[in-house]
Image 1 (cartoon, rainbow, N blue to C red):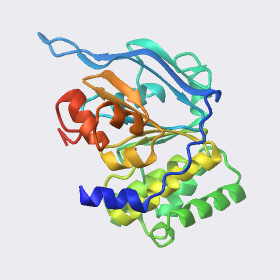
Image 2: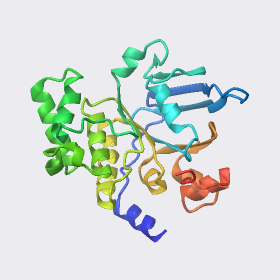
Image 3: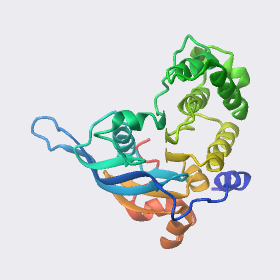
Image 4: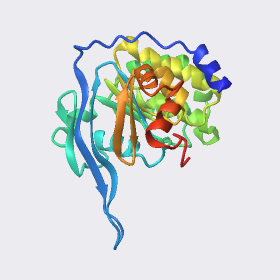
Length: 274
């Protein structure tokens, strides 16, 4: 607990500049995803009718233990899997009917490290940037900017086959925003990072507010959600249990932190199943 408090003191959360009249970046209505069970078993309800909104420029967290439905929700929103029922839209574009328009607006930092191991970090960044048809000069300038902000210069010159897990997570993050997307989906973005790299990444993500970028973040690091998120949705077994700002939820459930909130709602720890 002392370590968590220390980290929170060292990171100053940017002022919440979300306006109640801001446009909606993401609208989710009754979203469901059921996976067919093995013969003789019931279907698995990975996501079971959740609904929520995310405003433009908001950093929004999805909290829950493994198997809660966080990644499945993201995969539906970015078009990797089709919903069983319900709907969602990204800046007004329906994820079922307008997926090509949705993909032009988003960047994705997945849990799995999606890089080419025999290329350097910079070569990976520039390769993925070229897939967005970014002009070479703009791509180089953007890569330089992101590499500098995340103090990734030395690592960017090395082939990624020798990267640590934390370095791969940093590279994944850079690739996910190389095209300056309006919405970024960050699925466990700081896994494997040492405390210094994690705090630097918090500052980097927090500064998205100044650029009016929208973020949907999943994390098992409770202090990360508490430090970064304007609001969080707590989900478990595919159901949305509560939603609100970290401060409001902690007050509502009379808890000192979001871990305590989760325990009171679900009866288990957020790291369960890790």
